Image (tube, rainbow, N blue to C red):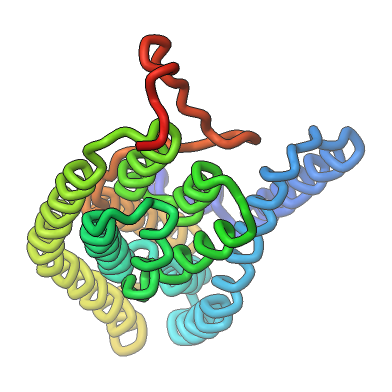
Length: 313
């Protein structure tokens, strides 16, 4: 009991306020130092990426921020626990990131399926003795909605007399998918070397993309039940704690003390760690992109032995 009393005195409200003030002052000094010293200048494309990320974060915060703040205030009024209010707000704000993922998986599957369908259409169009520059606009008209805007942009670049390899490289950057890199790399090689066998390569790539879609569908079906079970456990746990705090206040009265708030914060941190671990386990590991560029388009070097032999056929 003496140990608990001493711990309660250690985590009294004045001490917690002093720690909070110290954190605020330290953060302000760190920001002031960064403002005075300045930050290294980033390249233009990195600044554009940073602006896009900030814009996405602002849109996400606008959608979720108001709901999270409202949930945190309601929890704080019902329980009178600051830690519970903060944890509820963070849970609502990051709900999609922790317990979502199904929509992202479906979007990725639709993109890979659209790539497979477009590859098959491109293969069939080339079979009619049509060049790659003519086959791409013809196949873009019947592309799936997930891929059509990117292909229409590719067609516009070709009409503006952009070289086909450079336009294909930009297409790979816009789609930003490892499966698309494999297909676009085959098209870039053919656009540069003009060798035979493109139909067979596209047919094999389309078959591989179809197999990837089937694999992702099976994995997604297995994970949907696990994701639903996790959501039910979280909902029941939160409802149980809120019910005790509202209808049986005496049972959870130890959490009203400063030490109890610290313990509740540790419990919430353990729950958050478990949620993050489950989220990481439910993420599909996809290969990294290889068709990337820094400032200049990727150039495929021709083999020295065949550099003089290749040409339009």
